[in-house]
Length: 260
Length: 248
Image (tube, rainbow over all chains, first blue to last red; front, top):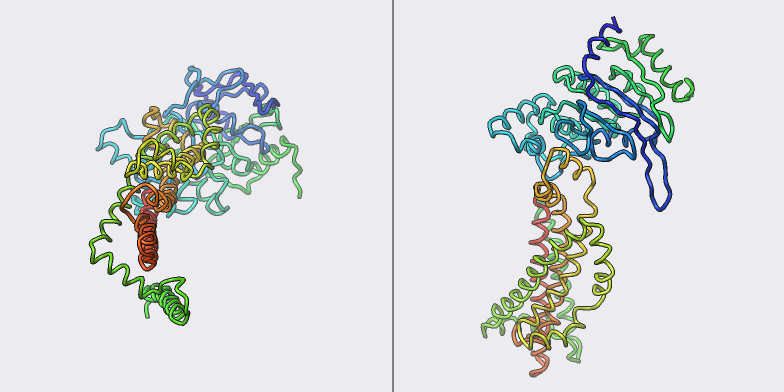
């Protein structure tokens, strides 16, 4: 059943990362960060990237977003080389990304400047409802909790109807209960919207709970060490043996022991 | 007693106590080193009677407003530009750091030479005292914008003008307002010195004139008190602007 599901999804390649190298130079010192990274992601797929901290996961995601250019190699989306940021692929930062000078409404309609007034109002209302911020339309981010700010940022991203969502450890700053709730919310939204999602995290459990596939990155200068299929249907039972098996396999890939 | 009343009552009672102590100290002393609070009130009343109070306050506020506003109009866009372009900052920084520590009062002879004895000199001195603090505030404000805001703005497809108006400007506004408040305080500080040399009206002039013409120390202290009160009011006004919710 799992291979069948995978076959259905691999219909069309959305993103391909081709032989990416990245070298940062600072004060005359050069640090190679990414070393021949290759990756393909299909349309509508949910891919998690995990790896040790400082391995260049966020750098890779910034390149996919078009904020950074690789030293060599290319990122292609729908076959075109990515050269600059584009509203069709929205980067979601940790909760810090919402604009503190705008209300919840103002944040959500931030990217809707090319849209008619009626349509703007419709989308704002729709996404406020979707992320559960009804009643907070006029609130400023400073008045919201961390989880609410994060949902607001996701809503702001979804409102422009992107084909891709790029999430950089979006739940990293949240407490563990809120984090669990947010994962469920994200999956629910993803099933509704069917965007392609690239989700960077250092949390292995998070990756196995969310992703169709998990790309494991090595230490710096990083490569993609392995891409694992998470062949468990949603909703996932996090005490099932297959779940633990996959989780342990990723831990092993990262060279981590199963015991503390 | 409500908390609000208590909040006001305490400083007022303390102020009253200090005034009483001041009065007692002055009346018990045989020297004339300082006029007492009662004499000072008399001085203020004298000013009102001669129609000078409003005239002097208006004159000082006029100079401060012009110097301050001109400095803001010039320094803020310039600072934002310098802060945004790293190369501009490298070019301008030594120059700014060179001029900054020179007290605006050092410019007095040059101000008189350029603008003569009059309003223009005083405005120029206030302008100078405001310009560098505001320039530095603006540079710093741009440089400390979190890159996530700029990246998010670019991500949603803003043009560069859009980026300036919808991200840059609102992001620096809180810091700018704080900078403006502090700078307005400096301007008010400098107005006294500027008026001591360059003009024949205003609160600074009042102080120097009262001493020169007949040792009216009650008027000197009255001038100081009025300066203090107006400074306090200006600061309160700017603070309420800082607290505006949508500007934070």
